[in-house]
Length: 447
Image 1 (tube, rainbow, N blue to C red):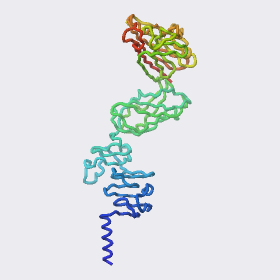
Image 2: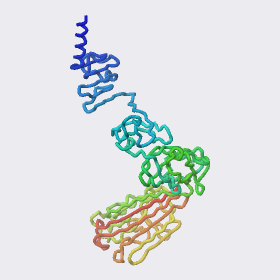
Image 3: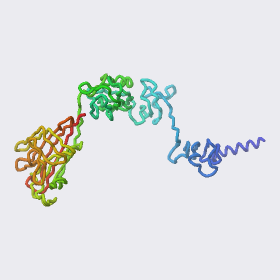
Image 4: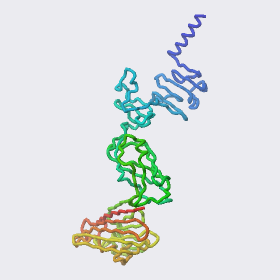
């Protein structure tokens, strides 16, 4: 009996030393394989479903949980409804020694040590995953775990995009932006602020990290005001909850107010190109242009050289001198637009100027205005906007043009245009491809 026991023991030891050991399986997939559900195939490689409850150690020491370990992985975990739970620690400082009661010191903590900080006290580091980099606990994104601090510049706060604060008009996609200085790279806790006087309106800041130096805190505003708080009153948010959630941040302003001024959004676009041949689809006017449309699409301005041959002109047979190119404007709206406008030009020989208070621009017509009179550009009419010719080089040119206009009515949009043209071979040449034009449009729009 004793000899039989020794024989079984020896076979078991030999199997552990030289073979594969399977628990709940006769078909181990590694040196050691536990099949939790006893469902592995008796031969061959089990399916992914069968391996989902397995624990496998290969001859190289790689371990797979729920899967055969990948050749490149020391530990390979696969699951469809479970995660990996790291140790949960309360990091009370960025240099906390996890083995403070033992013989080791903080210097002996291995680089790459990973924990989840529960942030159990107001003085703890912000909650989240951290790793030890050899000198301090750092966030998973490698940002410093230093206690957050910055100085808010509340007087410079603004709404983006600008919005009138009126009762019954909901905030949609509006951001409250509060600039700050002296940021230290620390991570702050997110918070939701409630507006003063409009309880239904809130401003939510997601958790984030201060830039080192200057930056901006972005609060997402939601809700519908029940009372108008437009200029000059404005809407106020109490910052007390923000400082309570982030006690290390300098309390530089107790509240922030926006909307006391109707701030406008500015969009700037520009172009620079050589004149290109075009044929007007409405009037059939032939010529060469460089054009640019306002950001809202309502107007287009251009430098336009009318072709010398309106009957059969092509890109190659023009004889009109490039100095005769004019500034022109077109309304892209389907209805008449009444403008208040101003034009100023400058060149070596003096200035040009014109203005008007009620010029009417018909829909989709190229042309210009002088003394409140609209002149459409046609095959026989130049239709210049302001003084004719934007490159009178023989008269101390080239010129620099400045145009501005606003619509009559309730809209609050202004347009500023600067334009300049010049030809490589002088103003008297007739090759439009030799003349280049610069146009810049600034669109200023208020809510």
